[in-house]
Image (cartoon, rainbow, N blue to C red; front, side, top):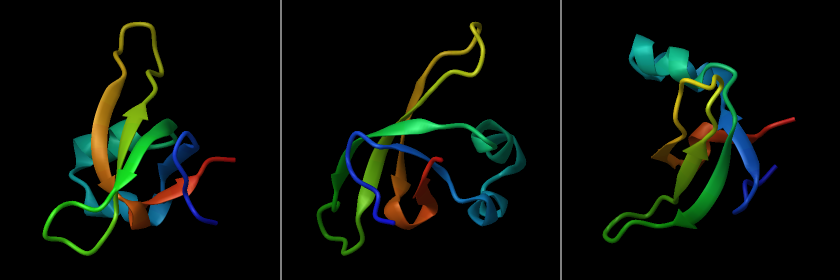
Length: 75
């Protein structure tokens, strides 16, 4: 299914292995909202700016950029 703006997404579990361990732990079962989808200048693949939700009251939301192929709609 295609990822769209303002959609709740998560990182595809098989892609978590490509991240460093501490980053993979952060993304594990975490959901975020796609803020914007764009193609960077000089590149041909789309990226998404995602705002990741805090799991605990002590955490803050994080905003990061990801390849669109690493994201899937959350169920």
